[in-house]
Length: 340
Image 1 (tube, rainbow, N blue to C red):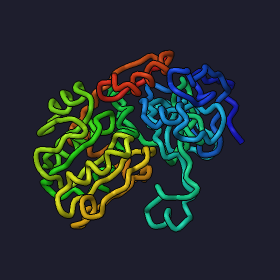
Image 2 (image 1 turned 90 degrees about the vertical axis):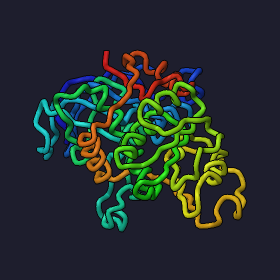
Image 3 (image 1 turned 90 degrees about the horizontal axis):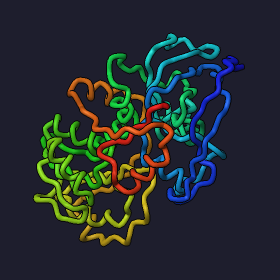
Image 4 (image 1 turned 45 degrees about the vertical axis):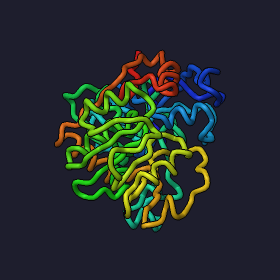
C-alpha cells in the first residue's frame, strides 16, 4: 500500500526512442506516492548521464514505456511509505543507478549485488530524476551533506561511482600509469581519484576542450583518442562507447596491463589479434553497474580528497538540449538539470 500524497510530478519521459534530433523526450505529469520501503523526494538536481542518452536514442531497449530517465538524483525527503524509517522529512538524499536487488541470490550473498539477475535500475526500470518529484527505495538511497551545492553532488551518484568501480576493475597498481579514453562526466572524476592515490594519468579524447580540462585537473598529458600515450600504460579505462577503440587501447598497455570498459553500451569491437592485443597477459574487463559499497566508498573518498565536479547547468525545461549537447561533446564536465 502506498501513501496517497495527492502530488503530481512534472518532468520528461522517453516516449519514442530515436535520434536526439527527433526529440524523443516528451513532457509528462503523473501522480507520485511512496510505497512500502520507499521515500518521496523533491528533486534539487539531477545529473545527465550518457546512459540517459542511450535510453533516449534506443541503444538501450526500454524496460517500460514512457519512463522518466535520470539516476544522479539529489533531493529532500518529503514523505515516507510504510516501513520506511531511515530518512526523516527534510533529509537530503541521493538516488543512483542501482535501484534494487533480490538480496538472496548467489551474487547478492557474495557481495556482488551488481550482478544480481533481478536487479532494477532508476530511470530504466522505474521513473528517475528528470522531474521535480520522484520516488526512491530507501535502502538504495545515500545520505548526502546538507551544505553542498546539489548541482555539484549530482554527478557523484553515477559518473563518480561507476568511474570508481571502473578504476578498481582496471587493477591499477600503486603509483601506476593510467590511461583514460574519453573524458566526460565520469572520467573527470576518476582522474581526480587516481591522482589523489598517486597515479600518473594520461587522457586521450577527441575533444580539445576536454583535454584542456584534464590538464587543469592534474593529468600528466592529454592527447587525441587514437594517439599513443607518452609511455606504456599499466591500466586503462575506456569511457567512450566506441568499440573500435578497444584494439588501440590494448596496444597501449604494458605487459600485464588491464583495460576496463566502463560503459553500459559499446559499439562492436573489431577482431582482435592475439599476439598484438592480448598476449603477455594483457586483460580486458567489463564493468557492470555498482554495489552500494562502491557508492559509499566513493562518496567517502570524494569528501576526504576534495574531489571537485565541473558542471554545466541546465533548467529542467531544457533536458532535451542537455542530451543534445552531451551527444555532441559540448558539455564541460557533467551536465546537470535543475528543476524549474
